[in-house]
Image (cartoon, rainbow, N blue to C red; front, side, top):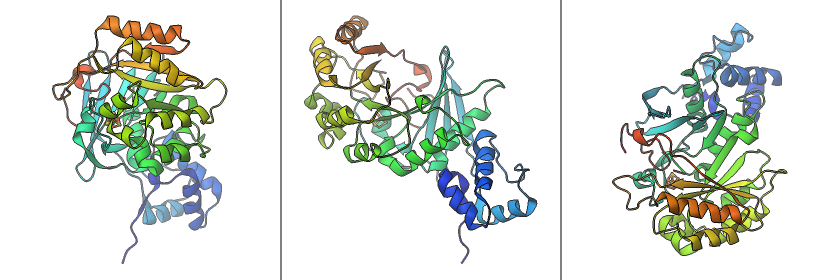
Length: 349
Ligand code: SF4
């Protein structure tokens, strides 16, 4: 019986080191391979010219390098690009590249579909298909990076595409380690943001990890009842407990937790909601992203009128919390928050 080959992109830097030492090679060889795979984007062993031919042949016998090609790319009027990928088993995932003034942000998926079922999100309506492997998460970055013109680079990564990242804990964390590793993608931890609904056991586990990144909590309500209605996960992971954990989350100096708040008319957009939100966030270094709902035919909600959003923002600002209204990007190609469902041209925080 032959042993299946290992996809090198499914290994963390430490796991790669063990793997390389099991082939009788020194640690620095694993660092060379990291650089080839992630800094230089090598797709074959032949490209790794500072490894001996015999070592490359030995690697090829026991491992391989997976690649992801977009099957479809759409560009929005505002320059946002949506990349659709078909995985080996036929499932489809999406990544969204968002150009802003001084940033080029890539939003990546961590699952095909999502089990969380948030009622304002089309991905939630798809249901859960499966977790992505570490390789499938990071190959989204490599594949999109290859399409960029020279001198252009992705500056920020947000894990806010399809799926709940903490529901795919091991693979997501391994991917974040690769994103921030100095010999792999080299992103500063300030430029990698993981957005979660706040799964309590995983959040507790996350507090013990040494890997650093920015944390965003998808909050979307100012009381338990509304949140449970909008986000079924709240019944098992109540907002109050999520916020208690946020209060003790080990944050470096001057780093804040981002709270995503999708604004939905008549559900969570009243001045009372804004005042309640202020009380809830007390004691947590926080900033709030207000995201006017991206309306879609199958979503039973509307976005609030602009005045209401601005009043909400003003109450938060006067209460001492930075609140930014996020301009919707890519809505015309269904690439905006909550619109990813693995299909081209159909109309998550
Ligand atoms: S908003 Fe995020 S967590 Fe909720 S269903 Fe959509 S993808 Fe899943």
